[in-house]
Amino acid sequence: MESPFEMITNVDKVENAYYIEVKPGEYNAKYWNKESVYFADEAFAYFYTTICKYVPQYQPTQVTEIKAETWLRISNQLQELAYFLSTNPPMIKLKKWIDFSKVEETYKQFDHHKNKYIRELINMINEFTVWITKVCQTQSYITILGT
Image (cartoon, rainbow, N blue to C red; front, side, top):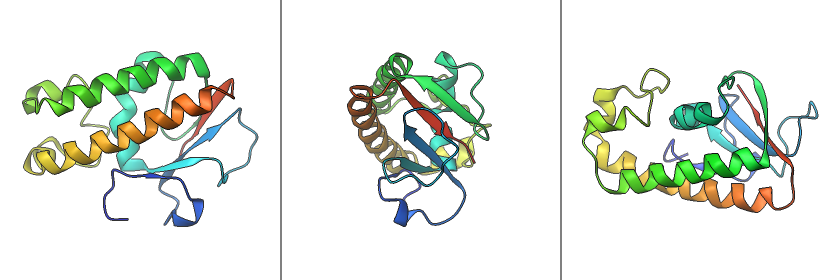
């Protein structure tokens, strides 16, 4: 995996157990599903603040079923985040969107690689929001299978 900011759509490309699986439909006690998408846990952590805004009980280590209509609100908020990032905001303003205590990269590390990270994070957000919209057309739930 070149960048941690990658949405993986092929389960065979998942390199280890430190991934978050996002599965169409309700929880069925099955993992490593072909229809799921996968994110390195460090990358998915950048979504923590946005997800918690709509699902306050969300914890990255647990299974969380989320209704499709809530996912569409999360998707809209993620699109706002992508737009905000595209404006090359000062680091101090990123704290509203990203809880740096939840991500592997520290505030200082992110700042050091800011342009690269922002570009890759925007791409990951765009891929994920397209996937969310597509899945919500046929599913009532999308489930996060934590690490």
